[in-house]
Image (tube, rainbow, N blue to C red; front, side, top):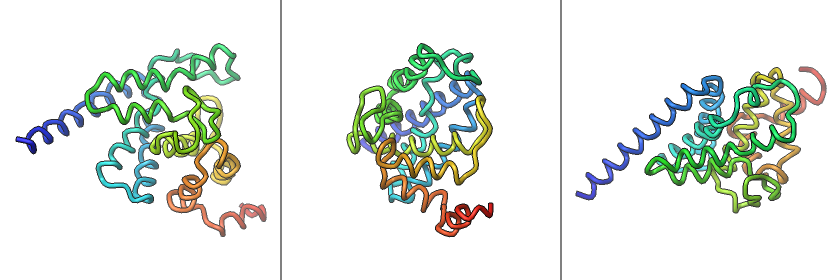
Length: 208
């Protein structure tokens, strides 16, 4: 009986994930590839830190749905090529809360929702929406923030072209300990994207 209930719960959760994914990609298709890449980076990071398979699935979901709340933001704001106004920025900052509310509508998605809510918190406590600090920020939110930032910089966006890998790496390094968990940044660079010492030396010499 217990095994049957667990199996039914897992099946329902999987169906919920599929439903949310399909609805999000249908409404905001331009974010689909970005979210898939972030999800894969999160999966790789989960393996690096030794998470159990079930936890890796949850972490992948956080990566996939981190921007779910953008379905509630005007597309003109999301695709704006120039600088956002203060009011537009205020609206953009609502997307973690919108995503949280959407996910909480589905049974079994509460933990994922909490991490989506926190994916714009900062290690120094200056993020949003709650101003959480260091390890008070949920682990999966800290990981997805790093993966999201790296992917956003190294791939073309509506407002700019893709940046070189070394610039993205430097941005993560410069913001480790302020915006990002410094230990996770180190692991991400060394174990996930495998940015090596040799690459650093070549880039500093201006050979690439």
